[in-house]
Length: 227
Image (tube, rainbow, N blue to C red; front, side, top):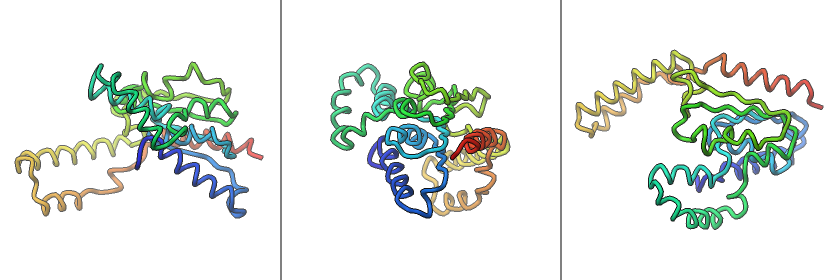
């Protein structure tokens, strides 16, 4: 994973590959990303790739912002003392990419962008490091915002899951908690393996069709103007 700017570098490499292949580069490119991906799909607009539309879900505005935000959660005010060292280390790892901002990429183009965030996100704060927290800095006229505030669907990783999936996940989490308590925090490997084997992968990842349809409709509207 390397660090918080790596997703941007990886996406840039993928889009550079697409641009260099004649069987791909005539197709419209629409980007969807969540969290690290939510940052990447917006900030990659800094690089001038031909992109038709972007949906950024629960993304942060810049690697340094989210790094500092999480440092404050762990260390409190002492995080301010460590900031120069974090900045230096990120720049050693990524150079100027460490400073790339989603907002700057969004403002460099007129690409339609949908920015989505949950107001109870406890990983990337809705009013902190989140891209949506910088909406007053965004000048691209083709940006739309979606704030998710429905209980159980307004966190970091539960935005796009169905109600049935959220109930199923709660049940399986409770089962695991009971196993953990039964074995004093040291669940035997065979018991743990049986638990995971018993998880229905479809039921645990079913999407909220209404949420995803809204994003799909946004993409379809962008396609109507694709040349």
